[in-house]
Length: 140
Image (cartoon, rainbow, N blue to C red; front, side, top):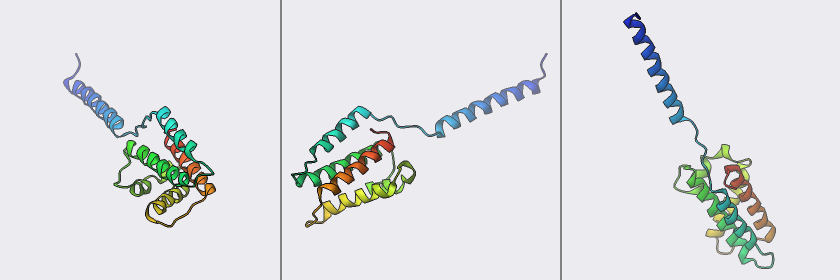
């Protein structure tokens, strides 16, 4: 016959093991699963609208790419009321956070400065930054 103290000890170990298991599962990092095909399609539509002979597309493609990245960050559950706040909490998620900040600041300048003119190369570079950022998050 097994001693009552031994049974209690074994049950205590089992209960602690179960609690540790649940603590690990509940606090572990969970990778967000994007609908990659949807994000790829959306980004391709944005990218294809950039037209070298139509300066209006320079602005709209940057704004739309910024919105798509913000949507991905929001979908991942990155906290913040604005994209800027979410970017501050995302330094380790991007291969070049400074480039993402530059692209986002360009988007803000477009939105807030009435006389801002940007060129095709600037828009193209910003799109490349947004594309890499979306790749870094696993959205595309």
